[in-house]
Length: 119
Ligand SMILES: Nc1ncnc2c1ncn2[C@@H]1O[C@H](COP(=O)(O)OP(=O)(O)OP(=O)(O)O)[C@@H](O)[C@H]1O
Image 1 (cartoon, rainbow, N blue to C red):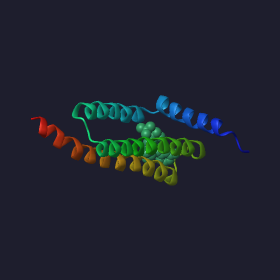
Image 2: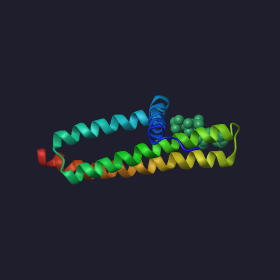
Image 3: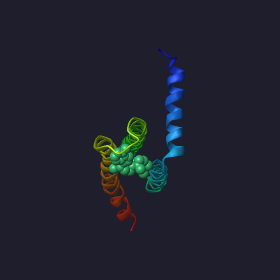
Image 4: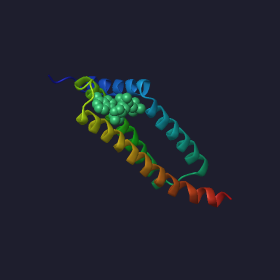
């Protein structure tokens, strides 16, 4: 059944809120995000650098939301140990890890030159 667009947005927003409440990892990512924004303001990042940061924030947070959704579905479908459940959970967690490592490397490439220019 189709639901109004405003209701879809409401459910999507509540999904984000529920994940933030439930998952420790997304809180850590949000903490890093706030730290990067504060550092970005301090170092006066260029427009392109801000856009790159925004894409990376979106990527990591989105993957964390998908990871939590996969964990919930796996717990529902396979409460007992199963190799496929393990593959699904570990693969989803791996996707978050890959995006976080890539973001950290790109973040360092953006911030280190700004840091050096201040010395
Ligand atoms: N039903 C299952 N079958 C097989 N392995 C599982 C199952 N549930 C969890 N695991 C294994 O245990 C690991 C931890 O899962 P668990 O659900 O306890 O934590 P998590 O919710 O994935 O972790 P976090 O909340 O920190 O992201 C998984 O990555 C997976 O390797």
